[in-house]
Length: 84
Ligand SMILES: [Zn+2]
Image 1 (cartoon, rainbow, N blue to C red):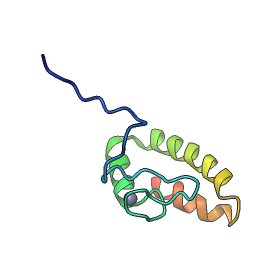
Image 2: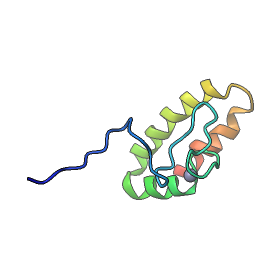
Image 3: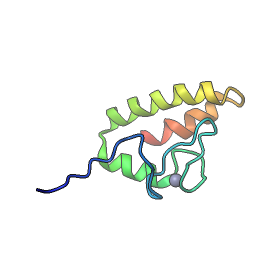
């Protein structure tokens, strides 16, 4: 019988996951502002533009709650602009 590895989402994260740290929204792997370059590359290759834009809008809305200071335009550039 073959063991299947379905890693749970809440499990320990690997060094290549590049998940967003909360509430700073810095990458937990490389410490850069999320979404960092590896995340953008991966999502661009795995998702179509519409899905990607929707996904990033969802993250942007959460980030605005976590990072209330600072201009929203900065967050827009960071989360949305590169998806176009
Ligand atoms: Zn990263």
